Image 1 (cartoon, rainbow, N blue to C red):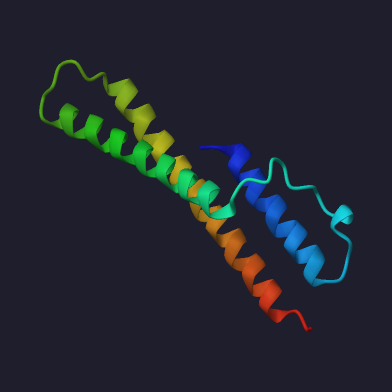
Image 2: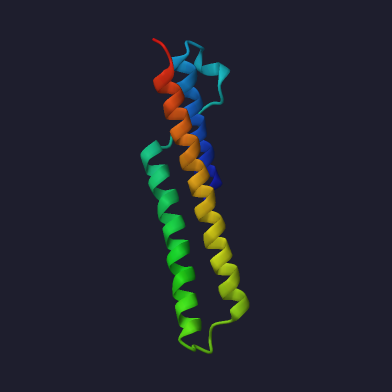
Length: 107
């Protein structure tokens, strides 16, 4: 998973929260590279999807009796896909929490 992209998303959220609470933008972490939030999020989701699809394809080949598939490699691919999905869920949870915090701020 692209941790640089996640860091960029978190920096955007921090700067937005700082602006909403009346703090200066310099008090929060600077936005690195000015990446588009939606693009970074979409790229991260696409990478997780690709990882899961590749792992599932490897598992299906192994189950079908393909002798070129190594059990160890398939298990590692499945675990990598699982961890990347769990990481994406945690990012989503953080984004939802940040959104709720911003919505609960009094203007």
